[in-house]
Image (cartoon, rainbow, N blue to C red; front, side, top):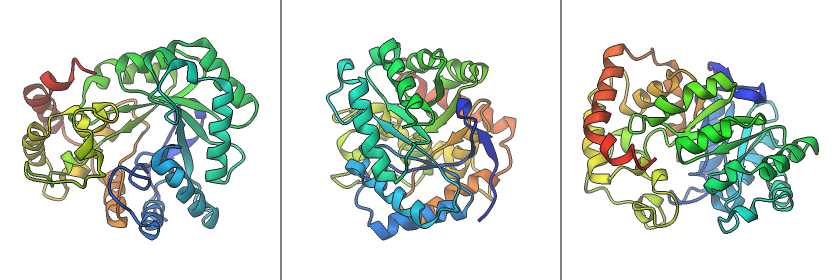
Length: 330
């Protein structure tokens, strides 16, 4: 296995690789991925130095967790830290975020992953009011005391939610959308997280593939792919699909971004490298539907830091093409 740079994931005190693996693709909503292909993705990531998997109990109704559990049972030497999420199995009402539900969801995830104690459990983009509930965080502290979970964090949609979660003394990490098409967390969240000792997990790093530069305005996605059915937030928060950017606008901006990649890089690796070097980021979690994609994503950790001119060009692109669409919304 290759060695990759490791960073401490906030208040967990555990080291994780700067490039992790998001496993939504292995569960659902990105088209079909066969079991053998999913296992090959996990194996390619580990062999490339990845020590951090991110999943959720609703990805494929538990399929993603089960595949990870199966893989790690066969590779106990892999040394992978697994973060899962909970909360999306019920109607999104604050009153459903209670200890009894947490225990039930944890029991299911522990069984799926084949562990007694979950490394990290994140509230899965809960209703905004949940972030301000003392009872919710008391319940999370109880789960830690019961050794069901080792630590907890929050996956959020907005910077305001992130700041509320960071203020909680038990919050180990915050997961937030961050990429060259979503810069607001740089201005409001990353410094506050670093000051509090809270880890930052950057998700949707390629804007649902836009930043790979592979799509045109005529690209068609499968009917069961969220990039078809959630473009306007029909199924869940619009920000989870193309980072909330209109597809046609995103394609044009992505073509401009692709020109910033050096001759020895790719647009996707450039986007991941940009995230890795933002102060306060612990790990970025691109997804992959093939072993080749997993290896290519991991290779971003070996890219040299982007020069100041590229960082300035990313900011200029965002200000000209993206800011007006997404900044106020999130």
